[in-house]
Structures are given as C-alpha cells and as structure tokens.
Image (cartoon, rainbow, N blue to C red; front, side):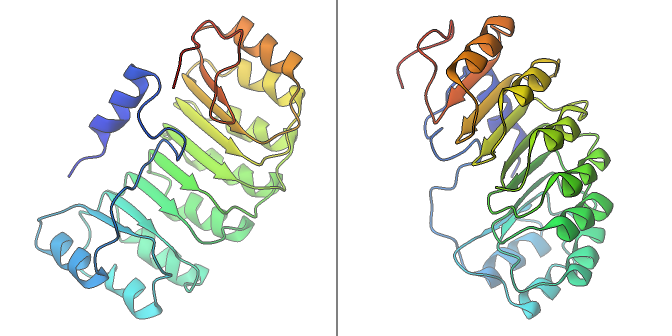
Length: 234
C-alpha cells in the first residue's frame, strides 16, 4: 500500500478532510501487531500502524526479520532503547514514512539521522529535543513533510529546518518560536504548506508572512488568517 498518492493529493487540494488532526491521518483502530508483521513478511502490505500501546522489546525485534520492504511505520517506541532503534532502522532501507508517538529526545533524533535519513515523511508528536537535536535534520535530504511538537525548540532550531532542500510541508505544534522564525520560513522556497499550532508569533508577523508568500498554504491553530488570500471555510 502506497502513501505517496494521498500526500500528493494533500498538496494539490489545499485543506484535506481531517486536517485538524494532522497531515498524516489514522481513522481506524490499530490491528494486532502479529497480523501487521505477518502481512509485511508475506508481501501483502508495506505498512505498520500500531499506536494503541508501546511495542515491547520482543515486538520491536520482530521488525528486524523479513520486513525489509516496509515503507510506512507508525508506532510507539517508548520501550526501545537507541541501540535497538538503530538496528531496526538500519534493516528498513525502503522506509519512506515514519511516525514515532513516544517521546523523542536529542539522542533519538540523532539515531534517526544516522539510520533513517531516507524517509520523506517524519512525524514526531511528542518531541523533547532542542535546537542541538534539530541539527540532525541535516541528514534528511529527501524529507518532504516534517511535523513535530517540542517546547524546547527556539528560533535557532528553525534555522536547521530551513536548510532541508526538499521540504514541502511543515507543521509545528507548541514550538515557542517568534516572528524571527517566520522570516526564516519565508525564505524556504520549496515550502508549500505551513501549519502552526501554538507559538509566540504575532498577528503582524504572520500577516507579513502570507503577504510575502501568498502562495503558501497556511493555517494557525487549524484556521486561515482572516486576511489570507487562500482563506476558505473548513
């Protein structure tokens, strides 16, 4: 099952149904882990979406066996240390989309940069990394979509984000950036979509952003600014 078509559709259509949740949407209950692993191993699926509970060490180790074709992985990695994660990701060469729902710190982000830098979609909704951790993003040269939550990232960290050469969609959640970061984001030529939920940015700064980048699809707290030329009802 491929993820790329819905992602292209997202960029083409503007505001997809369910945009309040994320660019990456899960609407069905998670199946049993053993069934997901089995389907990948026999080639019936290239996705594992399991976020209803942290995977055990035993379950994590199952990802190392005959799952090389896995393209989409959404899971809670809280029980797995960095060594286990490094080994898992080193054995998933075709991984394109990664969502980690457990806490991700600087060291784990560094591990991702070393062993999962080929991913095109990275979703980290429980980040505890800071500006130093974000320097690991320099390894993600093919990243198209980045979504993260972290209260420790500042304007300096957004400088690292701005250097991602292929980034089309950026979603920041509870990241305490200011208008200085908006000036940095304005320079990101590849960026097509920017979602901002919680920040220290002002109305004036955001208005200037959309004035200078009118083609940018922008939401603040899930809504368009009133003066946004792309504004429409949701």
